[in-house]
Image (cartoon, rainbow, N blue to C red; front, side, top):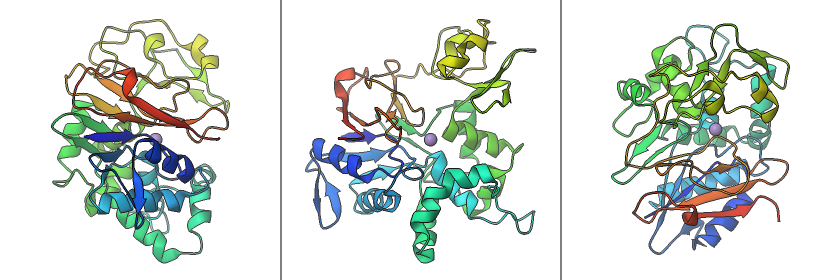
Length: 310
Ligand SMILES: [Mn+2]
C-alpha cells in the first residue's frame, strides 16, 4: 500500500513531519515504514530552502526500494536548463531567459558549490518516469490525457523514462513530444473562443486557460477554467467543444500534483485527487498525502497533511 505525497518544492522540514505523521521513521538516512511505501508526485525542487535535502530524502527512499517517484515539470526544466541545444550552439534546451533563471535561481544557488552533485542530481532526475500506471491506480504530475500518453509511449523506455535522444524533441515547441510532455507535466491548456481573452497578473494578454481537465460532463469555459478569481469575470460561459477535454471516468484512480490548491485537501472527483496544497505558498500552505488503502472511490478521510509552517 502506498502513501502518495504531493509537491514538496524544497521544503524538507514539512516533508519529514509528514513522513513521521504517516508512521515512517528514519534509519541510516532512509525513511521507512514497516508495511507501506511512499509515492512522490514530482516537483521536489525550486522555491524552497532545502532543495538538496528533499532530493536526498526522496532519492534515498527510492534507491532503498521504500518509495516510487515520478517527474514534475520542475525536474524536467532543471535537466533542460543544463542540456545544450544540439541545433543552436551556445543555447540550452530551456533558454536561460531572466524569467526561467528566476524560477530556477534558488536551486542554482543551493547547488552552486557542488558541480559534481549538480550532475548527479540531474542524472537522477533523468531516471524519473513521466507517469506510473500501477495495477490499482495511476500517478502523473499534472494530467492524464490518453492521446498524449500514447504519444509519450512511442518515445519512453520500458520504465516510462525519457531516453537521451528524446530530450531535444521534448523541449522544442511544435514537436508532438513537446505537447505531450507539456500536457502531462503542466496540465491541459485550451484556447478560448475567437475574440475572447484576458490579461494575467503580469499584464500579459492571454488566449489560453488552464483547465480542470478531469471534468467529464459537458462544460463551459467558465466551468473548467483554473484561473485566479480576479480573472474569472473574463472567462466566457460558453460550451467547450466535444473532445477537447479528455475527462476522467476510468475506475482506476489517478493522483496528480501541480495545481497549488488551497484549503482543506479533498478528492476532485471519485477517481481523481490532487495532492499539491501549496507548501511553498507564503501563507496557509500544506504538504498533503493520500493513504491509499486499496479501495475506491477516493475519500476525504484518507488525506493526511501538515501545515507548511508551525
Ligand atoms: Mn508542477
